[in-house]
Structures are given as structure tokens and as C-alpha cells.
View 1 (cartoon, helix red, strand yellow):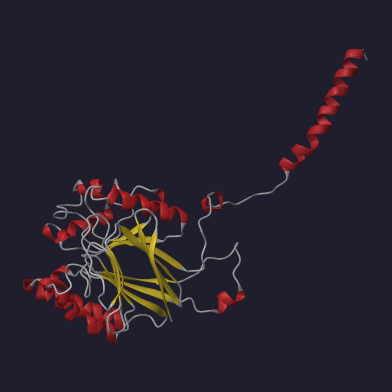
View 2 (spheres, rainbow, N blue to C red; view 1 turned 60 degrees about the horizontal axis):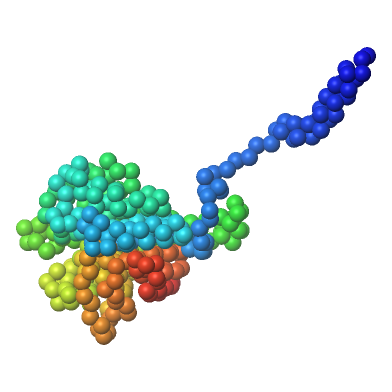
Length: 337
């Protein structure tokens, strides 16, 4: 063997020896399984089972600080768990939409709430401004938009309060403990203010009573959402809208132990606890603002600031935060059972 052939063969043997380890490791039949969430930055964790945001009175093509509120919702959703968004009505100013193809769906919704964290389900109710034209268009838009989920002008959802597993494991106590459910009822309140819609209102009230009375035995929290409040410390304290809704709903809510009534209509953030069982939360500060009155006994919190509310729920606790468009938590409270 010539010297150059000896050197070449020796060098190849040495190279081959150094590659056996890495190549052998690559040849091992080891398979990994990653979900997208495993590769994404983790959000701030808490031990609540369900999280959602509530924003109302927003649809103004990004004006009146709608865009700023939307940006903060996106930031909050990126940093905290969130399952869906509830819209408390007056989704499109000044006069609703004319069809499911109305450009306002783009200019006031799709092109405003653009953050990745807000590409979740949105559960809307209708407001008085939405009633100025074609309310059925907002129902039909559910077939156009992946995230707009409005199956009817009034509807309900039961949501299981199941906690996330810690690092893929479930504690034995968690497995044995009843998870419970939250019942969310979405109302259509504007017809209550019009005598010519009495038949429609009567039909909806029958449905509301049956939905509350036939709730699953494991429902821990009953939450009703409608646009018009039945109490307020905004400009409509003794307005006919407020008094009409109080007459229609308060006793029914007390009798059926409705924990929370969520609304908009007043362009502010409020937590009210009048006599009776139900807490009233108003989240109508998605764009234009109106004034609030301080010092009213049933008011626990009021702020004429742009923002939204954030709910965190499990079987025994319901936590609510009011957050302004700068990301400051203006108010926090927790209801327990």
C-alpha cells in the first residue's frame, strides 16, 4: 500500500469513528410531541378555571379611544389566560349594520380587534343602536366571521369550570372534586322598551324563566348578559330604560338566584349591589364616555374611564377586574360561595 493510501484510509476511519456517536443518536427511534402552546411564551397562571373579557358600546371605527381600548385588551389577553370576549351591545354606531356584508364589520370590528390574543370567540348581545337597522345581520355574520358567535338574538351557554392540568398531571383531589358549570344567558333587551314588541318580549321572558329554572344541577354561577342595566350611577339613574328593565328582571333574578347581571348602555365601568341577590356590573366604556355619580349607596365602584372588565371564575369564586386603556387595574372584587 502506498503511503498516501494509508494516510487517506486512516483519516477516513478516524472521521467515521467521530461520527458514530452523533449519527447513532439521530438513528434512535425517539419521537417528541409538541403542541403549539408548548412552544409559545407562557401566560401568567392562576388557579381559576374560566376567564373572559367584557367590553360594550364600542363600534366607532376606532375613534373615541376604541382603538386604544382594543390594543390594551390585546395586551391583557397576551399576558393572561382568556377563553372568549363578551360584547355588551351597541356593537355598531350610529345605526347598526344593514347586512352581514356591511363594511362596518371590517372598520369597527375586524380591523380594530386585531391582536392574536383576541382571535377567540366573541359572544355579542344587541344594543339600542344595533336596532336602528337590521339586527338579523349580526346573527348572520356568525356564518362569515370565525370568531363572531351569535346564534340568535338571545341564547345561552353552559360552560364546564374545568381547571387546567399542572404540567400534564391531574391531582387526585381535583379529579374527585366536582368541577361545576357557569350558565351564561345572553338577552335581547331593547324590545323591552317598545310596546309594539310585547309578544316578542313575552316569548323571551318565558324562555329566560325556563332556562334559569332548568339549569343543570351542577351550575355554580348564573350570569345574565343584556345591554340595558337595571341599576346604574350613570346619566340614566331614573331613566325609563333603567326602570323598565328593573321591573322586568329584578324579582326574577332574585327568585332564581342570578349571581351577576352584565350590561353596557352606560359608557363607564361600574359595580353595583342593590338590595337583593344579584350584582350588577356595567362594562360600557369601549369608546365614547359618559359621566358617573359618586356617593350612591348601592354603588361599590364607578369610573368614567375607557376600558373593559376581566372575569375569572371557578366553582367557588368569581373575580372581576376593571381595567383601563392604559392597563391599570382600577378596581377588583371577588364573590365567593
